[in-house]
View (cartoon, rainbow over the protein chains, first blue to last red):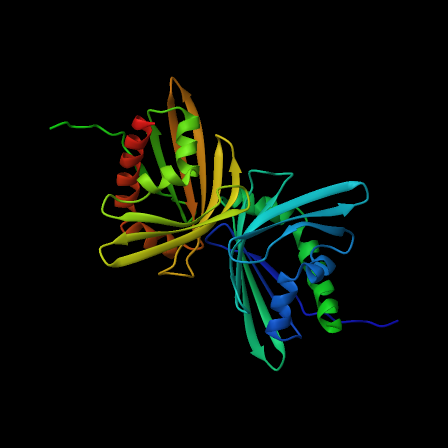
Length: 161
Length: 161
């Protein structure tokens, strides 16, 4: 049996504003980590927890573009959609996010890709919500499993690239 | 000289989160107020202060669409862009907003259109920022003039429709 060690993912509620901060390092160059967030053929392999299968219904990862996808778990479908407000090559993605099961909930996610040199990258994600209640509901929804497992799957995608 | 009285526009900083709340009533049915936010031929007549002229560079007011426009004041151009995260007919628009002069600043705006009956509509806008500093910078930028004058111009557009 092979044991693989993955970097730790930190997920923290902001003390001052209704936001969640996620920080994660990857053993891959910034261009590769960035591309794995934009290319739908790669995204489908890692976004979300291990238990789901993902289908992309719409994907235009450009400034002013939009996305829509479905996570399936057995007979249950979970649909998500949003817009790409900005795609700044190899440095920044700003996107919106809604789970269709809670259609009034919207968050604004800013992803910053930091080149650490030596083929390593630090990703910082800030998700801002309209209220502390909405933020805490997201934290309580089981998002942590999806984020942590998703980034472990992304490690594998990057190792094979 | 004719004196026209316009409804008051309230613009308030949220005490708990980095948001701005705007509330304004209009003497027009909700369908008309909603359409005046979506139809570029109408938007161009009212969005922003009286001193500017507006040119729309991109406008797709649908869920997953995007916009880009220019406000000109003399020789100066001010460019803005964003995405339409959701367009829910006659009730709700969620959009992002960036002023290109401050490209890292993004706000998430939720517009709610409330039918008051009797041909009157209340519009509530919540703009959420990533930080209190960004919110306060927006408030200090002179946005109040643009919002108040813009809605007075919108009154005129609605009166002529």
